[in-house]
Image (cartoon, rainbow, N blue to C red; front, side, top):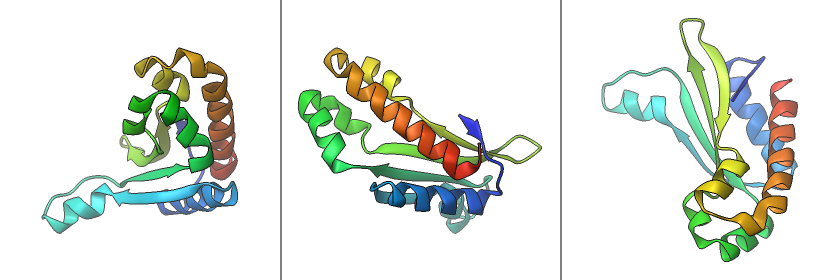
Length: 126
């Protein structure tokens, strides 16, 4: 979880551009606040981006099929607290490795985490 230096919409846009620039596919964009508005409810801005690279993710899922429930990776961009600070949240790849007992994939998951975290920090100005 890292705090963005940018407002909510700009953070989402910067992340989308960075993901695409790094050869990742943006599979989905889920705007939870907009969905809430459509049914007459209110919540702070919260958007989930599902992104990944099938060339990387497919071998992982082939080796540990249950990883497919957590891949592609999910990024949550949200405003938290009274300050309405913008945060980017994701499940670490180390956590996913433990969750799916993918012990043989530790090296690949570490590499994915390093790449993913660097991309996020670059996009949000850290």
